[in-house]
Length: 229
Figure (cartoon, rainbow, N blue to C red):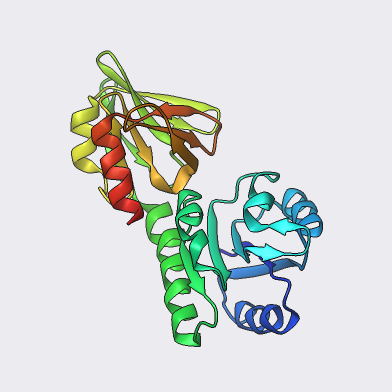
């Protein structure tokens, strides 16, 4: 399986070096490169890549401007000379944040994180009760879970699946580094968070990649901040 990949980088030498490495990786397929904000937005919206290597500052704006004007990209590796954008990057559910000038060893570490997310997480599954059956539930594309009385709803894009379980029982089966209970009624997949912003007293408004908005509790906010750190 190959994952479509786009590089957004305004420095030609850096872009060429990264491109040559990506072309040698059998599970990545380079489908385009861009050196400016406008071209990047067009390229991403046309190709809907699985993976994005993204610089922060470039002609016409920033990498964050690009993300605000494109379809969601589930796997982003930031590569930039500006360390002050790290928190904003990880609020975009970044796979990694490479600070220039980075070594080839550091790049390969980021690629290993990416490989782990693409393969290990996307193939992970749990068994959940649905009616009188125990059915496998693949976790990689689940945006979040919400409680509905004696049931749980698994939200994936616009699709919903009703599970005969409780949120607490489900939480025990999930990877706590990827699935965080941000409220007594919601567990979110941190890889599917688009952005977060402050909301009230020690709360956060979480915008998921499918457009859903979730308000965290104070305890949930603490968990999110710990994750970012």
